[in-house]
Image: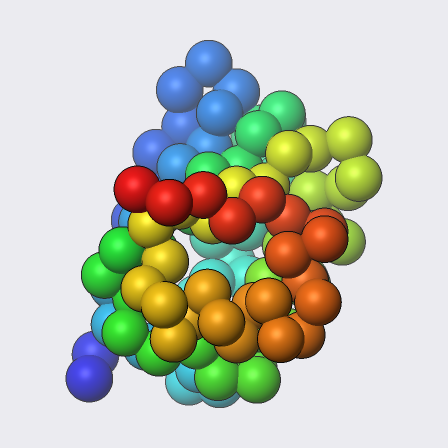
Length: 103
């Protein structure tokens, strides 16, 4: 499946919408988008994941990258993740570093 990513920044809140599979092939685009949000000075990062069908270990590392790039003072929320994606985040224990929010 293909991967699509969209970024909107409004009043220092960055919203990233993901569609498809966040895997090694897509990680670079995700990192570039997170870089753009960080450069814009976002104070909150919201990742809409309702249309994310798969999160690989490389995708999980990309979320770790986002946490490191944005800094501890920036709230990161993954919103609407399908259960397999949310389960991957929880099994890795990464739900303690970001907020998993139901849609």
